[in-house]
Image (cartoon, rainbow, N blue to C red; front, top):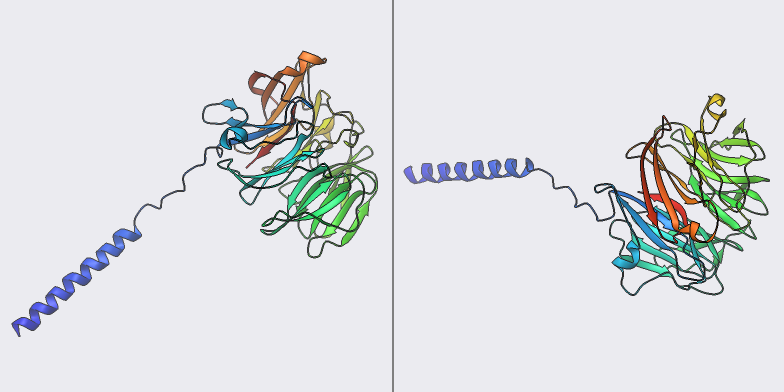
Length: 364
């Protein structure tokens, strides 16, 4: 009897210990994934000095409040964006990767967005003239180009299948709801069904696009109007702008139009077709009065270059880059400004030198 009692007692002690151990394990603090070197901040995509060197990627480090230049080349010794005759004009983050797209025979480079280590590329080719990228799912994306839109396999990086319905120079693209909005020089907005990439609708005369507000509406410009499109029904509404936006086809760059992630608010630059300009406008849906005057005007002797506006959600700020007015050495005088997205007040300025020719911002 004593042996049986002793065995039962030992068994209860073991079970109790096991349960206590499980409870301790369950109460362990969940380890957070380590933050990547290039996660706390945003990227500035630099076109580069045409003919003198390739473009580059600059990182604004939020923790230190400083800019770190040429971060891709530094993290990938021996890899670059050659040839020197190409320019980087577009980049975006999709599925944890940064897609950097070059024009004029340059490559499409894919890097881990947190570490900037290269994970793949479409090699440079004299036959290619890429514009922009949009991801569809983990296996597929689209690349616009000087001669239409191509489907790209995100595992093999093959981009030889052209999508029907668009020809000639194509640019910005956005996946929203049941559709993929694309911009064509010849056809305006060409909206594809996401399911099978057949054309759902074409809208002639569209100049700038696309941005999406928290209510899911997609925004673009046509003539003197800013339009919103429902990405389920494709129903559209519009508001008149105080200026007529120019298209960006002459020396292609991404459309200078963005949206807040906190409010149903759109920001866009008033700039000529080759880039530049000094005024940034803001429109909050349902309030035309917000368009009565520029929201931000660049400081004296400073102008935008291409798509030099971005929305930094972490701080609810608008960031812009400028170059100094004039030519030659003036292009080496750069500034980045941080403005409150609600007030338009200047919060911070960073000056830096070099022939970067900043093309656009990219945020996580």
